[in-house]
Amino acid sequence: MIYANVFGYKTSKKGLENVEEINEEKTYENILTGFIQVEEKDMENAGYVETKLVKNLKWAARKNRTEKILLHSFNHLSESKADPNFSKELFDRVEERLKNAGYETAQTPFGYFLDLDLKAPGYPLARLFKDI
Image (cartoon, rainbow, N blue to C red):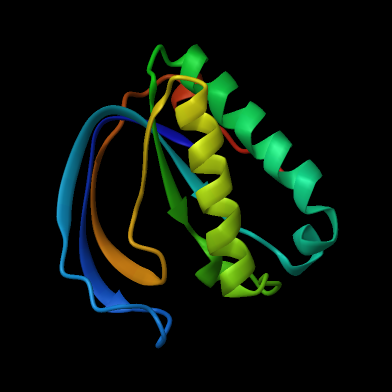
């Protein structure tokens, strides 16, 4: 997770063939971005993973004094990947739970590589790692 004063992206290249064509560019301010890797083992404990992910994102957002959370799929670096449909459904459920808790949430385009623009402050809680 990275808290950013500015986080922007532009769609660059499809990482999954079956996703719809998207040409998008967005910028957010004062937002926590979750760089989320969903692994194959997460499919066995979906409820647990979902709840822990929501709790970790809410905790990190509170620590960084923001109510904005962006979900970003970061699976391309992992050797163990969950089914893309499972991952997208997990993202959608997490986003809905965060919205229901009063957070302003969004997702980067799923299945895309993105050009990123990131400006993050240099203090410890602005960059967090959590293995669920």
